[in-house]
Length: 293
Image (cartoon, rainbow, N blue to C red):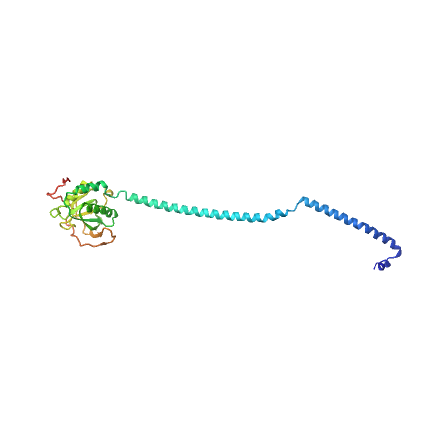
């Protein structure tokens, strides 16, 4: 192959060609060495200017990002849980406040309710010990919880004192009329049982306000205690009815019998319609000056 190439070159050019090949043979290795040296210097210069991250840093960087994300999620869950606990505590506080307000309102509403104190109970038991006793009925105002509660207290007091108290309440429905206070009623002065006035006297002696009255709703020979509305809610100038100022109760007033414990009621036999007003009925034979020994 080389012989064929040399034959193509004229003989007079062969010395020149040999010199050229000899020159290139020397020059090309030198150029390659220079190129390698320049490349190595450039690479070293670039390496010093922007060093590549070490393998350790490259291996640690990704886990750091994952750990930060996990910490953020855990903090978010903790915050949400704390918020839920706060909301639950706030709701409980609202419910407690509402219950407290209801108890306060109920206490205020019943602050003026009539009660029988231990001292009143003891005085009544002593006052009625030597006085005549007999059957007693109790009438309360319909749809009036305070009247029913006070009537229950009166019944317990009378039972403890030895009276034969009806196990059921009678109820009276009021419309536009008023019925205030505690009243001991009998059909008339002539038919009032012997224990009617002494019962009123025992109540009065015990500082339990009561008025003896004539009440045509009460059957003859019986005594009926009517628990009217609370005097605390009546006008300050309220006075019990008198013979000159009282008027007959309207015919629309109704009376029913109510159990002492059951909430329902059953209609009792109709009482006689009142033909005259409720009047003080102390008979001449009885005196309020009766005192126990």
